[in-house]
Length: 315
Image 1 (cartoon, rainbow, N blue to C red):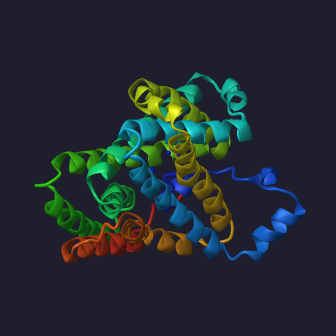
Image 2: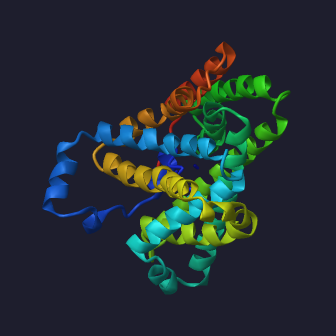
Image 3: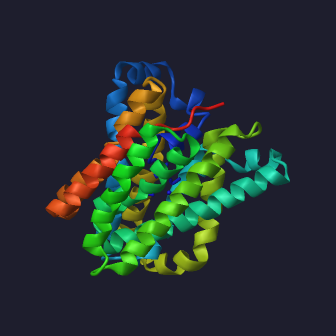
C-alpha cells in the first residue's frame, strides 16, 4: 500500500479500525493460535510499527536500481498477488452491487495514487518528515468529527509541528513537500473509504482490502509498470520489490489485527502516536537520515498531537 497496501500504510487507529473482519480461521491451527495468545499484544504492535516503515526504507534503497514509480508498482503488485492468493477477492467482488463495486474501485484508485505520491515524497524527503506530515489530516479529521477542546489542542500541536518540518525542507525540496501533502490528503480519503468498506454488509475488511489492492495494481500499471520493467531482468531488484510489498502491506496488516484484538482502543490509539517517531528512528538506522533539532521538534509535536487527539465515537 503507504506506505497497504493497503501500509495497511497501516497508519492510524481510524484506518486499522476500518479493517474489520480480520484473520479468522485463516490465521492458522491450534498451535498458531496458542502462539498468538502467548505473545503480548504490544509485541504485535511493535512488529507492525517497525515493518510499516521498514518496507518504505527498503524501497528508498531500491531506488538506486529501479525508478521510484517502478518501486511503487512492485510494492502494490506484489502485495496484490499475495492477498489474491490468500483471499481470492474476486469472489467477494462478484457478489457486490454496483455501489459496492464503485466503492472498492474508488478505494483502489486512491490507494494507487497515495502510494505513488508517498514514494515520490520519500525519494526527496526524510522518511520521518513524510510520516509526520501524513498524520496532519488524521488529526484534522478527528477535530472536525468531534469538536472537543482535546481535539482542538491536538490540531494546535500538529499544525506548528508540520510547519516546522516543511519550513526546513520547502526551499530545498518543494516537489517533495508537495507530494508529501498530496499523500497526506489521499491518506485522509483512504481512511474515510476504509470506514465505508468496513461498514458494507457484503464484504469483510480484509477481502475489501485485497480487492482494492488488485484494483490499485491495475490502476498504477500505466505509470509504474513500464518503470518496473528493468526489474524483470534483475533478480535482486525483483525479490527486493516483493520484499517491500510484503513488509509494507501484508505483515503490518496481519500484526495490526493481532494487536487490536487484545488492546483497548485507548491504548492502541496512544501507541499509534509513536508511528512518526518510529519512522524517524528507522530513517536514522536504515537510511542515516538524522533529523535536525528543528525537525526533531516538529516530529515531537506531531507525536504529541496524535497522542492527544481522539476519534469521534462510533454510532
